[in-house]
Length: 294
Image 1 (tube, rainbow, N blue to C red):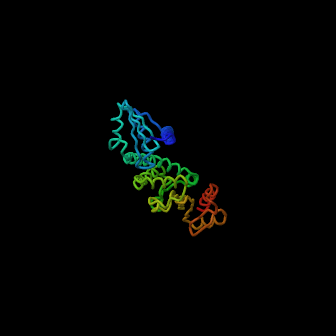
Image 2 (cartoon, rainbow, N blue to C red):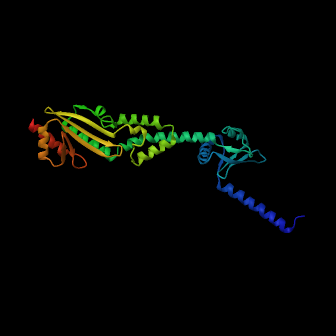
Image 3 (cartoon, rainbow, N blue to C red):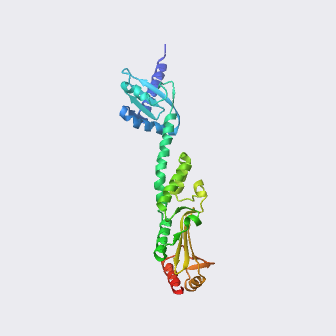
């Protein structure tokens, strides 16, 4: 026969276990299952699968045949008797308390969901990137050049190794998006790293798709004014550095530019800005010099 003290210890243990069970039941997330809730239930199971693939499982049944499914200490799903078979169709095996629950199917679905979300984020991230100030600054400069000298032809594709051209910006970004999906679209880690680098504007040359290019963005425009050939080149490299140059075919024009302007430096037949970029006022000066000499 148990002593009074043994009985007290036993009752204390039972009460402690009851409180632990009550704490687990109240702290874990709880869902009351109905077939219309299957999407919500799958979403929660995918979240668990992302944390770990296998979980402890406890299935309790009351006198009415309703089940109380407890997955680790994370999730509790109360399933009415009439929906039990429907609920179990989500899993690869029948649910009993003597099994560990393998969420491998939900992990695969979760990874595919994550990949889909990353793929959907990539295109707007690219368009946002090419709308940053370094690119729009180059676009404005190009428009000023075209407004002053016109376009005889574009030499970008033949002379520049550039990912996206100014003259075909939208089309080239779409093409880049397709190339990136083919290269990284099935690898969550690579996609996450790529998106992070794009969003943080980190150098992109480390990614294979960009390695074969010298420049991320740019254009090479041939213009002809008064029989003088001018070639304006503007680029942004994979580290987001802007550079520009102007080739001038006539020595007399170059000599005059050196005399009249201190905002450019000459190397052979090529002019470079001494500042961050050319300005519209220099384009006007160059235009007037060509007109005057020719």
